[in-house]
Length: 388
View 1 (cartoon, helix red, strand yellow):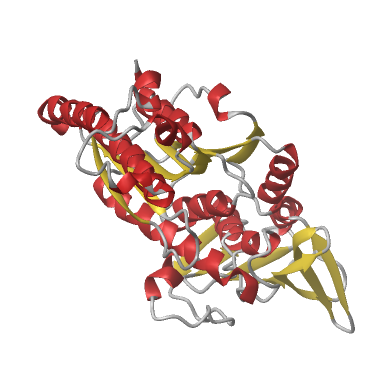
View 2 (cartoon, rainbow, N blue to C red):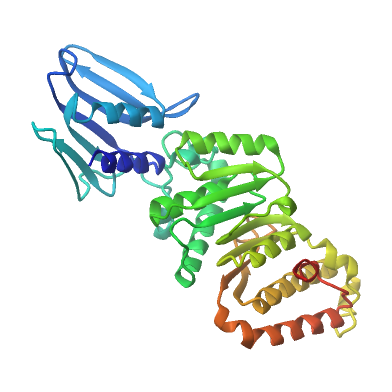
């Protein structure tokens, strides 16, 4: 029973939904005059901690602990120093009670309090539901302030994160992930979307994902690993590595957002080889096809203009990527990720495994790839080479 309460406390803290936790009904083992202990999240210079307010008859004492230290304190205290514990969150109230024999009873009921800080005003309620703006990692990554309010300078990033989670939720309706899904985010950068994915899968869907962020810059990797530890995301880790050198033993989901040029193809090939159930990429730069492209079709007159050549190269590159995914048994979609008002690199390709389509679609998809290469004078798409 105590383990259930501690698990509920951990989840509430890491998801930013810990409103208050109260320890009451002290035993004779409690310090003299100690009546209650109140726990709440507090942001310090060294990161998010849990503040314990020890309420004595004539004074209060406050001590701050990391999440893991707080859980140890609770584990030692519950049933020995205090017989009652109440945990309040916006979604559920949890209670742990011990009788004089030391037998514990754990219960959960409808919430008695709401989140004190309302999310940013918007007409899209889905975004509120998928991501809590009070989540500690959002503050540590600089998206929100200590009150859980999105900073004005990061409104675009907030929209991007929410749009990303909406996309993930939609994909999961078509292709479910195992509870302990292995996920790789290739080119994770500062980790905004990597943290959002972990938070969503663990705290919203109840999964226990194993997520690895792959990033070349060691400083960002160190920062992200430190942040993951501070907020208690135990199965989220980051490694400093070239994605070409990352070879996981298994992969259920592959993410690659804004991997430059053929790095997107490296990520796609890794996902395909591992038969990942879900693949999500947002390509960036399309140099390989643009260098090769010598149109031999009715579009030739238009492509003498550099900007039109560049845009056509992007369309051909991503179009062939989608067809090659289809040829490998995936159902694909290509769409605008977020508005060009926020970023020029706004195309996203998603793919969900659908083996039923493999035999039906493979020959047609490869024939269409061949026709595109012939019409645009392309020798070979990089993804084709990687899949040979």
